[in-house]
Image (cartoon, rainbow, N blue to C red):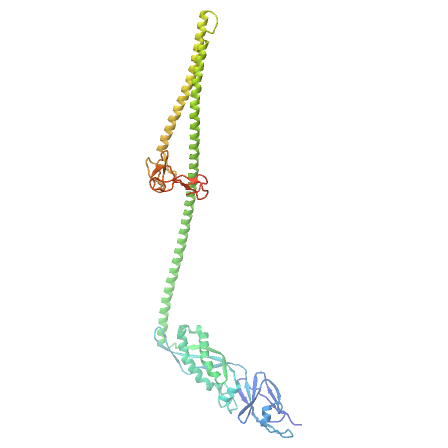
Length: 471
């Protein structure tokens, strides 16, 4: 039996491309490609088939391109003469990089120049194996990142200039564009890493590689440089100035907040006072309305009582006069009506006359009492009227007003003059004019109606007598 050859690669993971040392394979040889690999067949410098993960038997049916290029013997003993390259598809982690010289940085605020260093690591992965083979490997036995694998060329040497140039050209620009503080640069390494990744990745992809992640792990600051020390001093002064400004702003904000709180409290107190004043005002208005109603009722009752007393006084006078006449007539009628002697008749008549006169005297006394009571009532009414004229009250606040006052000394309300009988005060011009539908002075309509109930309101009225609505 013929021994079946096995073609595979199980070498170091740091190798990106590895060429199988044998170029002649027997018929039915086994090609094994691992899950993280890809295999390429070359014939006469030309790329033929590419094989993904799996196990393959080398025969013409499985390799149609080879079958058209390789003449197989009848006995099946002719070998496959070709080259096989294995591509490592794994992601190479934590590949170190660093700049070969310092990066010049000029502080934008102070204009002080300093020298920076930068280093870090990155992850690298094969993006297009065919492109990597054609552009970098060629006829070499393989390629890895460093020189330890023994290949004639390493990816590190190939891409070191690209990385160094990209970092030098873009590190200072990125720091200035983002307005990063150079003394606090460690806080922004992630942002800087992303910025540099966008600049470096296209150069690797051109050769079939890609950088999934790029990291700046350290930006080296020149601690012993005099310029850097001066920059630190200026930074300290700037920080102190910013702290003072921040404290001032905080105090200003606190003062504004306190002022707003005081203003809010003052406004709340004023609102409370306005509310109390409004309540007191409404209470006073209610009392005024009640007092006006009571006064109107008392006035109406007084007028009715005066009319009744007046009518009753006249009727009583007529009754008294009738009683006097009747008593006198009875006294005269009794004269001579008594029997007996002359002495007895005269005495009897005298007694009758005296009785009649006594009754008339009693009636006259009663009449005088009525008349005196009437006069006393009239005098009392006149005295009360005079007293009321002396003690005039403000219709708005109820304060006592001096005689002939035109405005209230307490609330400033205008005092309306005493309205004569048959006269009214015009609400437009303030003149006293006769009652009517229009003012004789300015022509303003004199009849007002309540907006709530529609009742007619006297000229100058401030409240409706029907519903109490304030006008």
